[in-house]
Length: 226
Image (cartoon, rainbow, N blue to C red):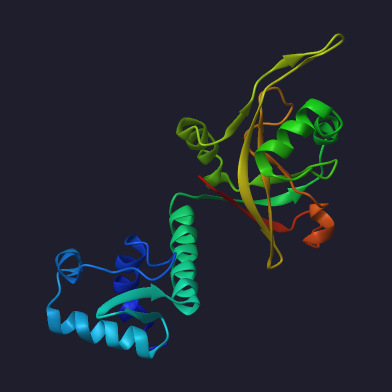
């Protein structure tokens, strides 16, 4: 464990040279230049990585080939996941509010197949047929306009059917947290609504009130991913 981040730069260089797919012969001169290290340090890192099981050597005649082992692959994957999560949250917008009763607008949207199909395509799930409404704290209300200006949401344009005309909706991918429980879902910015910017409507594949054990007045934190 203590050496895993020491050998990480070496593993990245080996991965860039296709050592994830099988044993490869590498140019130590190229790696020295890329890492900005010394021959002694490179030999030490190769020895540590082999001893710790992150890489293995293969000999073909007098030539030495290097391959990244499953343990090395697991380390690279774990670091990649950590970095992706950090970078996603670095660009995130966090909105806070309290649960309030809804007006039934969300249920209407969830009953219209074209909206539901669009939500499924954007979010990767079919939403529960209803929304959770939260009233944003005063200092977070202006962030809704900031989100619009960033244009990080997914747009569902207005459309018409034989009988009705339906307004557009902007959908944001979001992490919804209440009472210490988090659920992946979405936040809606509806073009035509009776609500002001202080009310945010949330959707998820489950009934959020049940899964997050919420009642009116409870605090919810919504992380908008961008």
